[in-house]
Image (cartoon, rainbow over all chains, first blue to last red; front, side):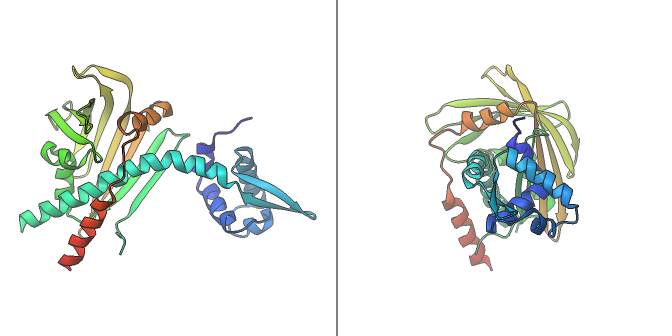
Length: 106
Length: 167
């Protein structure tokens, strides 16, 4: 089944996992220590992230390490960034307008 | 110094909803006016180099704002925002759809929900935008803001200079 990447990153735990493994590749056990959920729950999140190709597995001996698939993450960023920028720009303009309105009142 | 005003932007593609939260360094009544009065809206709603031009606006339940985003070349992209619910200085909801210059709607549209709250002299605005189709969201980005759209960082810089001078 082909998963939806936006659905994958909509979940706060999965976003937290992505942040953690962005710093360094980690095993599911090491990751589980950062969350209050069960090891099984973390594995399920990792499976979804893997299916979306947001993370990739690397075997080192008997351990599986998960690491970030940076190229895929950039794709999402590029798309969202455009929309985010529109709002950023809009709000920056509103800041200026509010500043002006405030000083007019004084 | 970077602006310390909260800005949060998330897209939940599964729920087809965009969540935007932003803090403003101004009292609630002022921010409310900025979102609900056409002469103020037109000063900030369109990201540069576009301009916002409101042809008609009647801010009441059942009323609407009929406006265009105007490109530097003078191209107009019309939209209609119909107000479906208003709780003064707290919340308002609207239905937003693209339109032609005769106000014929291009459906589907999107549902917008604005929440306002004030704390310590700062006003927080939380916006959720529900789109029936995510494809429409992509269209929203594509249509008005194709190439040529450039972030105007000068805006922010100017603002920060003004702010630091005041302190």
